[in-house]
Length: 185
Image (cartoon, rainbow, N blue to C red; front, side):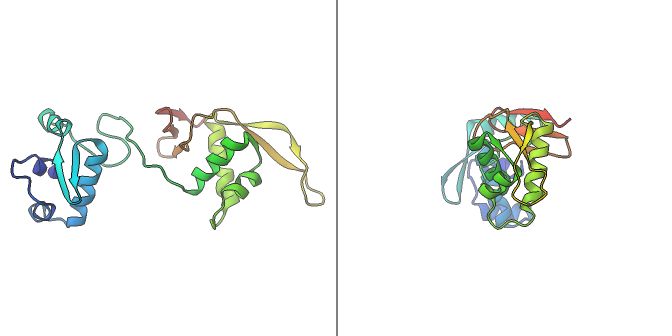
């Protein structure tokens, strides 16, 4: 909020001057300004130069408190930048295959991760608890002698390209495609 209030001044001081006034690093002010751009309170006119938007002026007038993190003070979920992490790649694999095993997903998504099988299994289990994935009856034939076979899953809720995010502290899965939260039961 302090950065936004400084940017609302008529003289619009440079970020280094704002950093000195707030007794923080320029990098921290730059990150805060970028976050304000993402939320629509500030517009970037050129690198290092920011201008407050109408939305930003209204936020100050309303006395709105802007917080960090994926949820604002009103409880609205903020946009999360697209990533290409392991779970994002797992989600893409599940969407493409429709029916899969943990091994299928790992083979498609692994890119040097340690414990990829464990993490993929955990993510599939989370999605299963949230109603995205279901178990299929029967197993696919395993390759090792004496194997019971490979457990198969089906993607029941294919909501879009963004991978659902597990928010463990809240016990929910947030879907960025629909904006909905699903409890993990």
